[in-house]
Amino acid sequence: FDKIGIDTSEVLEAAGTKWNFLKFKPGLVGGHCIGVDPYYLTHKADMLGYHPQVILAGRRINDGMGKFIAEQTIKQMIAAGSPIKGAKVNVLGLTFKEDCADLRNSKVIDIIRELQSYGVEVSVTDPDADPEEAVHEYGVRPVTWAELPRADAI
Figure (cartoon, rainbow, N blue to C red):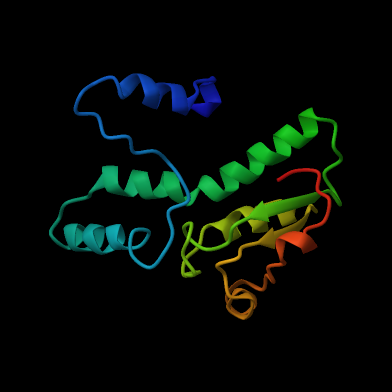
């Protein structure tokens, strides 16, 4: 929808007027189960000769959300007149979902890596994330809220 100027939130709001509509939307789907379990199903389906394109398309969209979010951030920064190389961006949250210490398969790292590919200096804070585990898993050390630098974007 973004490429043709349609606001996904507005589409979901309109669709939500139907009594039985379920509000599913693209996002950072990570963790130890939801992000990977569909692949078990699609693998078994492939073995049986069925090619579950809808499931795979959903995973492709969700797997690309980190890059999409980072690119949207970069575009907003450019529109605001911020230089990109050397810009500072603070990321609030590293675990795969809120109020959870689990870092497994967190897609936030996709946002961080994509921003870094533009030369952006990224700082991240997450009170639920274990800093040592974050360094071990992703090479990222979360800082405290008080340690976050002044940033060009959040």
